[in-house]
Picture 1 (spheres, helix red, strand yellow):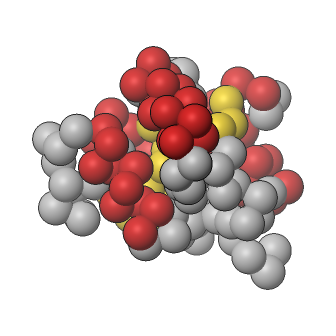
Picture 2 (cartoon, one colour; picture 1 turned 180 degrees about the vertical axis):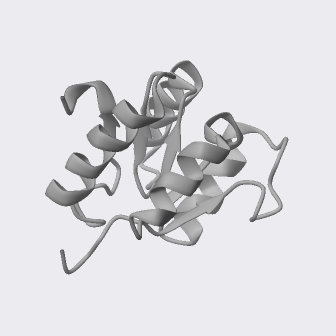
Picture 3 (spheres, helix red, strand yellow; picture 1 turned 30 degrees about the vertical axis):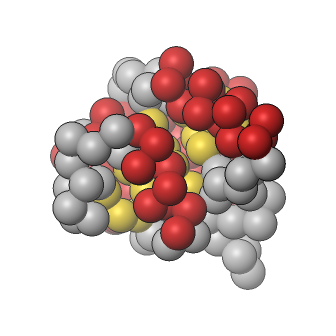
Length: 119
């Protein structure tokens, strides 16, 4: 894909096996820890990811669904949010790779996607 999705994994999604599996498949990821943003509020994660053109990947459904709604109601832009349930790394990777293959970075702008839709 010409405009691949670049991911930012917030601290809720910092699973060493997940990070390793994504990188072994050449997925462009940046973790909150690598960005020096561990333990910051969720809004800071979203703002940072947007500033560097990355889609947030998180297990924190409640807070990020709320942030997405707030951003849209205020006319604020974000670079996208992918919400996943915690579970098997294999299942998460399989679903995430389907999404990454089907969608572009541009597609994700101001978009909230639930990984559970990608079976």
